[in-house]
Length: 630
Image (cartoon, rainbow, N blue to C red; front, side):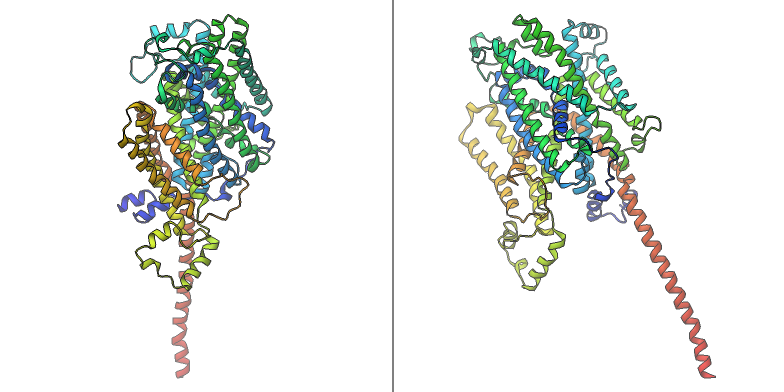
């Protein structure tokens, strides 16, 4: 144990020391101010969020989910995913207002929560941006292949098949090459300006509006009520919900991918004029506009053509081709190309920035953050992350990439919501001492009473200032709440998978499972909140973040087992890097070691001076005695 403790830089192994190391916080003054000009307005950030998010989801995902998972009820799936995203977006917005330096959730959590949670969130962000970029370029590849008559998939599928379960049918070399080229463009200093991004975003929204308006001339409400007898085998029971409530929920878990990307607003906030106000505004407005776009496109798509006749790879050109409107087909195809390219740049641009920040903090390998003298960018980190993205795009198909990114992002959003809860009730150090002094002077004997625990849990004394004790109560309750959400989600699954066979015992189990969640949120709500003034706060705390955690965890368990296996492998790799490298090379640990060394040297010098004085005194005493004797 002593060797293990010494290896990780701890004086002696104990739970306290381990907790201290894992919760080391990055000082706010250590978050060096960006040298980039603060020129981005709220409109620029909103356009960036829309451009980065409105990509594959609107051009590809709606057709795939409606045909295979939810049917016409894909519109409800998008609504559920939008609600979960808005809840998460509000939590991100409070994080941005709490830390007076714009940046990603990684920086937020490092400053406010601690090193280990920051690493997990940063590691998940790498997964999110890498797979997000891979899925966009995969969508671009399949889209072009479909428009050209599938020559690429036919050739590669015949000559280079991948006969491994869990991977794609063939290596997508086009997607790999495009990813490397985009990475090279970013690595050599090509930067997406806000003006170009705004143009692409407006063009993207223009195509979406064109699809909705043009499609309204060919819609038929009968496609939402197709009888079961007319539905081909394997495509559900027809009607508005051919795959049942289960299909809607599973579709929401996949459609959630369509809203991923708004957190790049926080990453690009380093250049915002007023990040505390513009980031919350941009997050909420961009999510609302993205939902309206998805809702409109999916509604028109499923009303123009029966859900089981949709083209999974390029649904929008296909539906206009079936209706004989070839001009609209080409307009949509060209618009989709620009939209996917813009979305890919928006997804790839933050990835090297996250890797650079983590390597600069010592949590990832230092060479990933090396700045090229020629290009003034982290060239090695950008190209290696591009290589990772290209490999993911080449070996996995689109649905697998979507599921993998959904689970990583859902976990990151859950952690952000949990952090917001803990920070809202964090200890008020400057005011706590006054409360402790008053409680001691009053001679309180609550510690010896059997019911003291319940009084502390429900704050029967009506404390108005948060203390270490109330902060610990909130931390424990948030942890238990998150764990119990997994149990409750399993109970809830019974109702959405087989609602017709639900028994009274299932109803009782649902009620009994919900009661602990409500009690834990009530206990949290009874605790005193922090007195920190913020420009934006999540409303209805702790209920709204609690619901966000529950929705995220519920959507996570709806994903298939292979997605969980791949995600666990990713987390295992990350934990191995953190334990073997990050925890030892952390800049905070090195700073602590320097401070300890300086303190030891100072103590040694003081001891040496004291020894010299004592020695001098001991030498002077005999002389004084001899002089007095004489």
